Image (cartoon, rainbow, N blue to C red; front, side, top):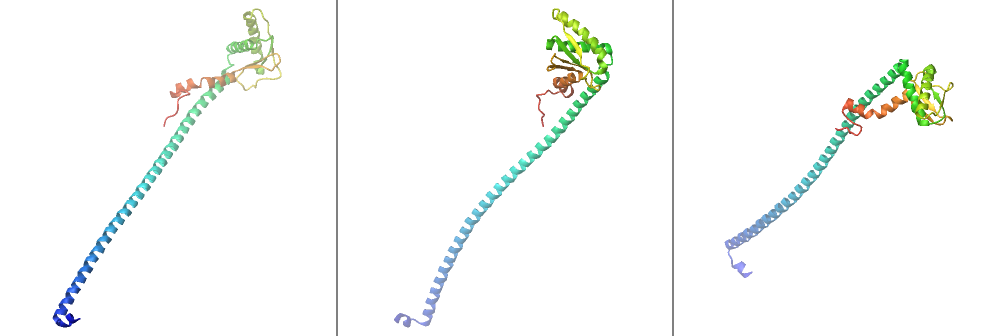
Length: 232
């Protein structure tokens, strides 16, 4: 205290200024340090947030991209299936039309030429006789075919006897149970008990043909076989 009282007013003022300047300098340096740390922490936090947001955006983009890809695949697959079904439908419609025309032509013209129809019935009856190999059989036919079928049966019976070493076969026509008049013709050959039959009608032959010949018909019309798969 004696030194302070010994100092002049100018000296006291000078000392106070020095102390004030020192305190101010310390405050400025501390402020700069705090500001530097704040900037550094801000930069770190900003970088962290940027990385997180970037990762989030990348993840979201990847998710959206996959979803878009899946949606595109589904759309493509759906369109391809629609086209495939339309093509298959058109092909089936054409095939159905062909067999319908064949059915119509067979019904209208199959028995028109009596001599050819009689020969065909003979062959159908013989096939039934050989398959059944019985002494007595019954034939079902259209009522209007009675005359032709009787002649065919007589001829078939003789040939059967010759081929089978003199074995006779009795052939009768069922006059109660007939084939529909609107059918294409042909015969059904039944054994003696009527429990076994050989369906040799022209309608059945056409049905079998529509199944057996379908692969070759497809190949002829569409250049494909039954094992070929539709390609997108």
